[in-house]
Length: 192
Image (tube, rainbow, N blue to C red):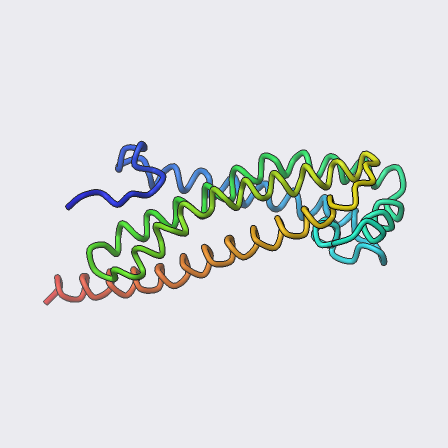
């Protein structure tokens, strides 16, 4: 059988699970750091912290959020966005690898699910690129750029990014459940 055309064909098969585990643990650790750090960005104007800022949508709202943070909050937001550049490499890698590994495991059966996994594996790379565009727009606003299109760029990039990530995570959950059921069936058949 030809190997599925996922983004990780260049990684030897025997190292793909290890690559996933390393990226997954790093993603969890950095996610925890960003979550704790992000709590310092929450206030009445920015109830969800950096996520609220991502979805400000217009210049007036974004400016109000930035002003509500004050000097120390703006510094924290800048540091948070900077650290997010590392995160936007790690989480797409983790989700993409999970999609590719699960699609490979479920092949050659489950054709629609396998094809969906391959597409979502590639799509996670797009999610990371959209996250980078979003961060650049948010940084620019944070530094005082008053371009009216920046909050809209950040909003659309964040919305599409989250849709791709959520689709990838839903695939991982669904495919994992199917893979676990298949493993249990194989184990039951081998003990007969």
